[in-house]
Length: 294
Image (cartoon, helix red, strand yellow):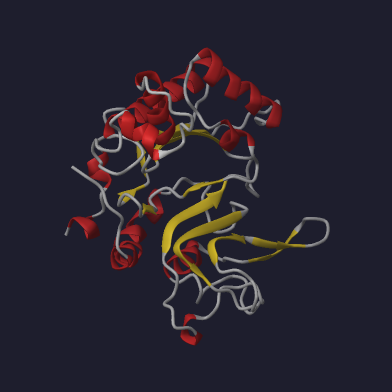
């Protein structure tokens, strides 16, 4: 088993044929108007309407316009079908409309409509407390593993030579900055975090999501005392890292402006569906969508 990037045609087919069937499976808090933003990443930068502004390979779009007091006034998306159309054809359905900073109309360019390599939603929310998510990335696990095994004196542990010395770049999936064993360990860590949530925090509602290159672990209970505010999240990060020795990305948990991959969206770099999972024995190959298996 190896991996590859999805082609432009496969991405379009996925959001046209496969993704709509998952809309009813989305967590209840992921709606057209709930998350404060949706965001898209593009493989190739796309121009905006205003000349002199750099092309964009990542855009965020607010779900609501607000007044000077921060109160909601006008919704950018009325229903989830509007989100889907924005994903399928971002420039033609940009909520910024005719703003100078909207994506340029592809009909006026020698470029096609931009194609989303990744789809995200904001963890900050209009209708519920700030969503608590812990991110575990196989790339971090691979670098930690390399640091434990490589005896050579390599100053920069962020370069490919370091991973190559540990044999990681040659291991399946070849050419990626991790091996499948790092993905599997990330998933195992994810369920360890879920156990911490349920045992230490008495959490009633949790979710583990295979992200394509690791896992996202959600604690979805609303804590009535402090709703897992910034200070609470710092304590949680310290607990997971220092006590349980789980290699998380603490910034994702603590930064209110963070976005997360939309469940059931396509991680186009690895041709995998971002999938909620129930077991650490999850087979990542099962996350390859039908439109790519054909």
